[in-house]
Image (tube, rainbow, N blue to C red; front, side, top):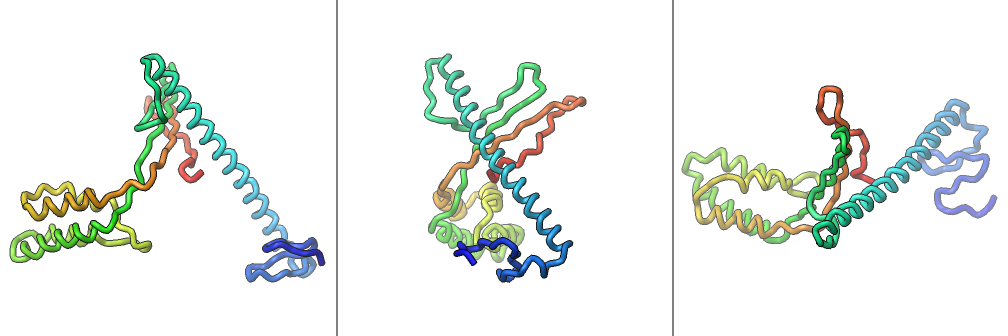
Length: 207
């Protein structure tokens, strides 16, 4: 038997779910046919993912080049695409939208903010703001990965509460947010017969 690299399967064998080599003649025809079908579909999906990745990279580059060309008309030089860009075909049938969103995390100041918020809740315990307490507890809940939802924190920060400690807590929340990266999203739309734009179903976010 030739030397095998990890996960390599020699000719005449199939590897089962436990990682063991099984002689092909001991595997039923339907199992082999199913295996071939799955591997064929996965191979096509991987090739398609590569094509989508190339399309995304090329499209970002093309939009960047066009943005720079457009900026030259006003004697401007761009250091890169910033913000959102929307491009339309001349007849208005198609739209391409490139949007960018910051990926944020919370640093150690989040705990200080929570302590300040807890102090407010403690002072309000005898009052009539039980709903606020429930909202705060929900906002600071973590998911299975131990992460806190930005959306819930934003909802908390939108509350208009005239209290010095509360406002200090909200400032601590804002200070604790750190931008770690920026994610770009490309969406392509076509106007339907009713005049409404429908997004072409291309999952480009993960490629």
